[in-house]
Amino acid sequence: MTVLLLGLNQLGDGPDPARSGQPVAPLPPSPSSSTPGEPDTGPGSIPATNDAIPYARAIAEALFTWDTTTGLYPSDYTSVVLAETAPDTDETDELATDVAAYLPTDNTWQQLQAHQTQQRIEIYGVQVAAGWNRIVDDAHGQIPDGTTAITIRAFRHRDSIRDNVQDTTREKITFTVVLACPPRVDERCYLLRLSELNNPL
Image 1: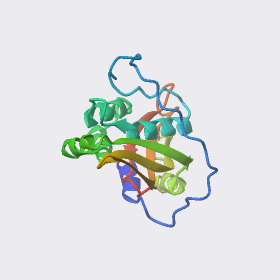
Image 2: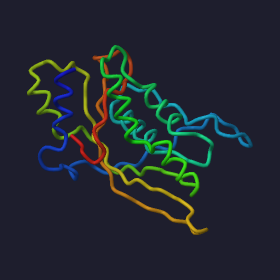
Image 3: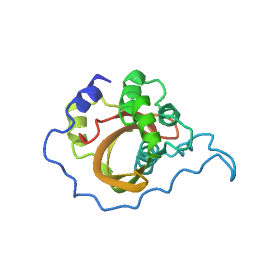
Image 4: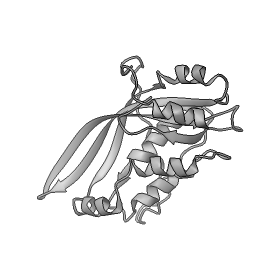
């Protein structure tokens, strides 16, 4: 996977191709495993699919949809994403580091809990990363077929209570999700790596 890592190190090179994709509606939130009247037992799982675009959207939803009022912690949300790690990959530790960077630390989480903070994502663009074809060409066959990079463009919303007043913030974000899909892996897509936030491919 040296070539793929090289490609990730090139994230952010060149102009931002942000406006070339058509806007798309965000995925609905993943269904909760809890029933009415019971506390949440954890965030929903990510649906399996062999289609890179909806799979990347589901990864984005899982990364950015969380609620500090449920009794859950960052590790509960990261575990859902890390369960999607591609089999037989040698980058599991790197992916764990990637994912952790998208969630608050435990100390920050406790501060956010004091303000009853919730986060959600509003996706408006999903497309194959503009620099991906160049990386594949430069790899001269070293990147397996079925490996792809999908760039997500979205707004991140946070709702909090501060001094007994509802406070909402909205921030534009973009990032790239690197996936292993068939024929690289059997039947469905898996997650390989994430770019740095706001430093897409």
